Image (cartoon, rainbow, N blue to C red; front, side, top):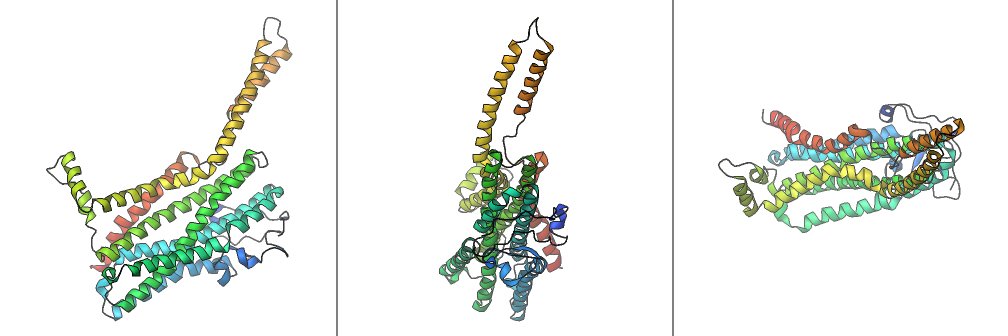
Length: 413
């Protein structure tokens, strides 16, 4: 494996919006594996089109065609399913709002995977430009995080299990009546599940970046410029993960509606509505005794966990490094205060200008050390925190209010 040369004239890829709309960044020297290491197709395709992970690198050489296919393939397959159901006279089993929600999660999963890989590519270029010594570590990270087993084999196996368990449940859960439609729908679900699991694996693996590079920060091998680059990168990863996890929760819920309630209104909504004439205690008791209470509890737990998961996703991988930084800061603060006390003891009626200068210097050291960061990556202040917490609620709002209202207007007109 190549140990990564310094990217000679590889500047930063420009404004962050260029990650989506701007031109593909030119490949930096040394980013591709050299002879003797694993073949480049195993982990990525790094060419003029940017950085692609498996399985996208099997089909595409450039990032933009991969993005276009990711945005169009799943909607096209779903529209084919809609057309077949209408051709066979099964318009009543087209569950528009539920299926559009699932479609959004499947399409978004492909988009997020490509964006995450592109963000990592940009992180490589920016960090190598700021500190060429980090090249070997980044090359090792790239190979470990983009391993075929994690990104392809495990998602394929889990998607097969998910579809197989659906058929193991028997014919009682077939809302489409006609098995030909159900088989086609499940084939579409299989592809979508794979995309979701591929992106989930990538989100999970990218937490390793925070841990490994955070240790480099804690041990002083990476400085403040690199910390700022890492902070921006990991906040963007957390935002993408927030959208993805919220969409996954909606997918689980909407599949449940399709296969259990055949697209009808979930009866649990009646349980969580306030009933006039009942006290709070009576309301809780009535809900507790209802057969659907367990479903409602799972529903609340699912969306509650999705709402707080993004913040934990950002913080937990840094916790070990946070402890290291806290211990280092406490030691430095203690030493700086001892120096300050010694300088203060020298002050008196006979204090010289040198004594005063030494005291001022030690006081500045104490103030500077006390301001040292205790976290390797900043969350982005209050705006970043609010953004991560608000994204899941925003996604649910779009689905429950905007999407369902739009579908009612278009389908029932």
